[in-house]
Image 1 (cartoon, rainbow, N blue to C red):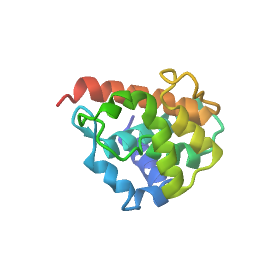
Image 2: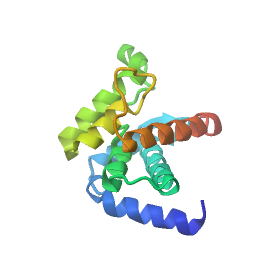
Image 3: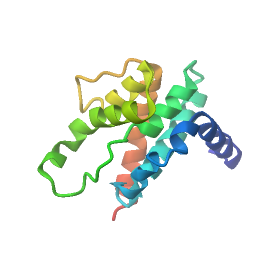
Amino acid sequence: MEKADYDKIYEEIKRRGRDVLYSPKYHEIAGFTQHGNISVLRHCLSVAMLCVHIADVTGWKIDRTSLIRGALLHDYFLYDWHEDARWHRLHGFTHALRSMKNAQHDFGLNRVERNMIFSHMFPLNLTHLPLYKESWILCIADKVCSSIETTKYRK
């Protein structure tokens, strides 16, 4: 992606995701590690960037505001899953629902955003199916970013 494209996407994310990005509560996720040495905040921003890029490349008619908000909030689970707690062992299966509930409570979500967040771990969670193009884009972008973060940015 060229710098001009990157800057354009970043500006769109700031504009469409303003209510999320400028919320002090949202920035709590900067204190939690996601993959390797990447914070949950940085991960969510990377996923949002890739989501918008994928939407641009495919040319699909989508709800871009929902795409951005869903991507920014997809891992809004608000805990450190690396801590040695028994219930963290199921993080991969449970954090999508927790993220969706937290995001609904703190920001309010529409049906597309709820489905995006709830289904972003598909196919690990086979009962939470992506129903919208925005949900599929998030599934793909999250897996690409997670793979890069896990292999490239190890602690």
